[in-house]
Amino acid sequence: MSVGDRTDDLLDKLRTLTDGEPWFEKRGLDRIRRRDVDDQTLRRRRRYQRYLGAGFLALLGLAVWYPPVAAAGVLGCASAAVAVAAARGRYYCNWLCPRGGLLDSYVRLFSRGKRTPTWFKHPYVRLGVAVLAFGLLGAGVFAARGDPLAMTVPFLTMLGVSTLVAVALGTVYHHRAWCQVCPAGTVAHAADRVAEAVGRDDSPRVEVDADACVGCERCATVCRQEIRPGAYAEGEVTDHGNVLDPGGPAGATRGVDGTVDHADCLQCSACVEECPTDALSLEE
Ligand code: SF4
Ligand code: SF4
Image 1 (cartoon, rainbow, N blue to C red):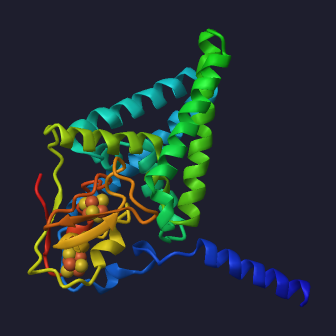
Image 2 (cartoon, protein in one colour):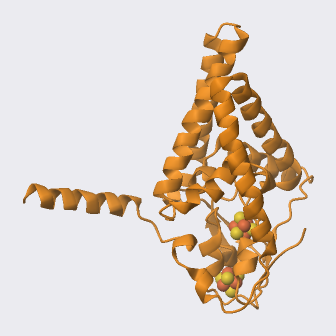
Image 3 (cartoon, protein in one colour):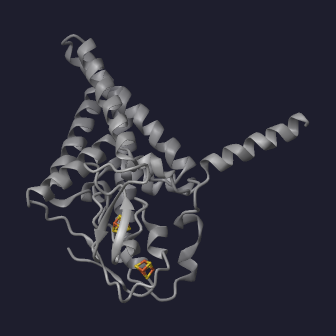
């Protein structure tokens, strides 16, 4: 086998490893919509996220110049994500996260748009990423030995490295792949489940009308969290919708009855807009 053949072979193997199902943005499903949809909410979100994404880049530039900005940004965003999660699940990640804005507005333009492997969003993987991130951050702050300015440098490193990882994942898979393992998102997900367990969860959930659903899976092709809303019509689903209940590599199985009971749902309405039979709804 020539060197060229071996290289092609290697590239094919690599593609097999990284390729998932093609995802919405690359499928051009917009062009084959069967009906007009009111996607004002999506347009408004996209416009708003362009500003958020640009704001994130400005924050990154400021933080390189003056690291305390990075500490304020990381602590502020993480606390806001968790505080919002106690009342509204991962609403913050869709509407307020500056890095989410960067991924949605800019990384989306060159993303390959592939699904991530199933194991990628397993709670143990998410826990590992969170422990690594918080552990390195804590070690860096401890090593600064009380010097206030030096204590902010680990935040800048964390912000820079995690953004590079988010952009790399967003390029290889779909643009929001990072959000499935983001430590702040994982804590927000867990906070939502805890709030639910103590009866304090007001997060709106997508509802599925089982009679109207025809099982076409179009809703699944637009979900940035790789949720399959149609599958929640009735019966059972196996998913990673509850990090407090890890299950096997594909997640835990539970009975469902018309509610998309998944704590990573961003409440973005993309699936509602996409459904050709109006089987989905999201009440605010
Ligand atoms: S797009 Fe609508 S009809 Fe198709 S699977 Fe999803 S909920 Fe069911
Ligand atoms: S609202 Fe629909 S598209 Fe948006 S994250 Fe939730 S399930 Fe996915």
